[in-house]
Image 1 (cartoon, helix red, strand yellow):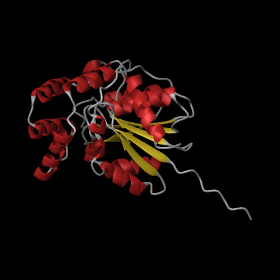
Image 2: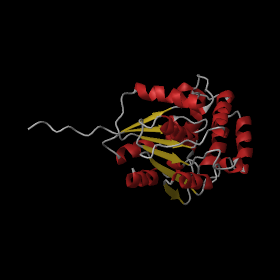
Image 3: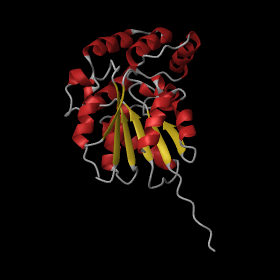
Image 4: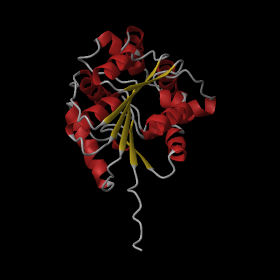
Length: 254
């Protein structure tokens, strides 16, 4: 009898948000890999962040998308069931990507993200967070900066060692003010994409999100008639606050 062909391996692409890099995922990629042992989990940095910190971040978002897509395609040909998961700005890129290139991913997971035409600016960036972002921009000490960011996007408490490690990311891969502004500008003007009806869209939100109003995700899910998963207490950075919870929800719906 002819040898039975194995199903193509599914790949996951994880994209972080504004001024963050792959190391900010924490243990989530490892837990996701354990939850989906037959799949491959990949994390890529956005232009201007992480390993790409010395590169200028292109504007608009479509150019940022194509930059990441070029890197993704260099990793090899994907399967028909690949998944892209984006947090915040990463979610906007994921939505835009799946619309522009529907053959690339079967499933899109958008975590605590928003779109300009669906939500007002004061929901996409809540008033308290606007002041916090300005304060963070003026802060030069990496540890103090990371503490301000954690207070804005996380509800979990980090140990002193964890905070020191996360602050250290800025020392070896500092994101510039210019690239942060370019990323923020791209997020502000991102269009509302149209989807191939065969694309599986999953929207995830945190009710404890102080950066992006949870109603943004609700409107997003309603607009696209998508699955909506809700965590009752986690902050904006849900994959760090409650990584195992997110993995379990993905196992139910992907």
